[in-house]
Image: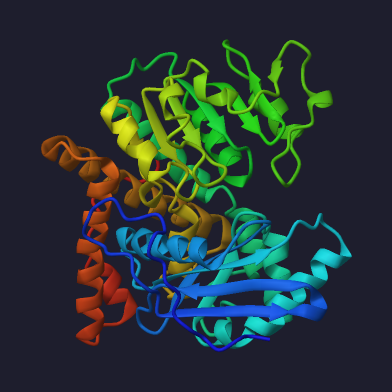
Length: 417
């Protein structure tokens, strides 16, 4: 059952570092429970714009409503920074189940119970622990068809995302290139370590290798794989399962595999991409970071304490709401009917270019303003997002359409790099 909706106190959750956005209570937190199905979960809506909100669903052992409130708030500002007139939300299921029928039944029951919220304007997609296949199972159980009233896609929602799966990794890749240029790293031999080799980490790795970057370390749940001369990314991709675990027995024997915890932190690399879990870099390990800059390809992968320490050490951190925005941006464009009527290949190219334009523009403005003000990039990114959010809300209050509201936020960055 869905228990009565109620606000939850998010005070004490990961605060916004700008000092501008107070963390209070989200307007909606619905507990989604069914004792018979062993289901314990929540849907949290941080904001509604134009009567709509969106965010991912995660399935982890320790997720709770406070964590989801933090993530939903982050989603509000990530979407605003991308110029999308839609609010932020997040859902979560507590589970340690491996893939199989019992886990599927829990997802189905969640979809059935959360159906009124989805049909009421809250889109729930995939996130940590939830694959596209899992998301589709939830949608089917809810009898929810995201594009039913839009009709702008030339294929099913599932087929569209199979073709567009690398779009978040694409944005992370571009943000990594932007910070490397900003730091004036030598063009030849730029090195990257990637923590997390799920959909985002793999997408970023593909893009970076195409641009001449050398991936010297990749970490998954089993440890860190290293090669100072550059890892054979194609071999890594071929040996990686859907969940992002790299099967060591399928790798070339000369690669170094280290199962020590957090070994990826101290790998000599110019850049570190965090594409796994939240608070991966925290107060106790931030001093071990060797990279010149970190790019946040996951949700909140650096704790607040870590951000202060990294800033003190002069290590730049490109915020998740800038770098990890590709999937959210494309989902919002589709849900709001802002995609053009193109054949699938052309539409995917258009979506990648739309993400690239936003990431490149936001990085350029962010780096310039942060340098001028001497502030953490996180602080400046939330200031920029707050400005966009007010612009979007003002446009909607004036009765403008979602397309006109989105057009009120300008992006001047170039397209695909």
